[in-house]
Image 1 (cartoon, rainbow, N blue to C red):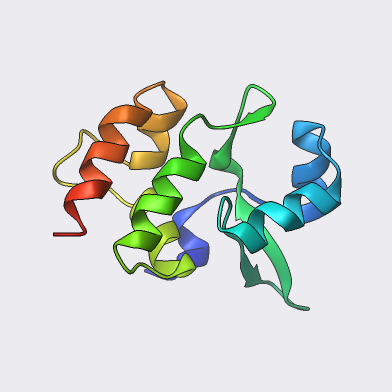
Image 2: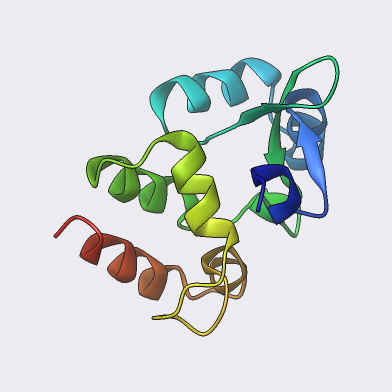
Length: 116
């Protein structure tokens, strides 16, 4: 499945900044620092993040930590997105949905096992 098909709703970086009430410069800093990942999609190509990353007007809790663990395990930005947005057999569903439900510790623990 294509990465674009894993989310039903994508946010451009300006849309994300508006949705969570943060300046666009901060969003770009987070991406540069690896605390947030974005992919280029659409025509013309525009950096976007899955809408599932936003819950109750904030980025889902634990997202930055999970992305750090995945990067430490050697995952690229796209591979991290794919893991977060796909059903994970060792978890009851998609990691992103569990994080939005407050189960970010379980997701981070599972992500840590990927490094071994």
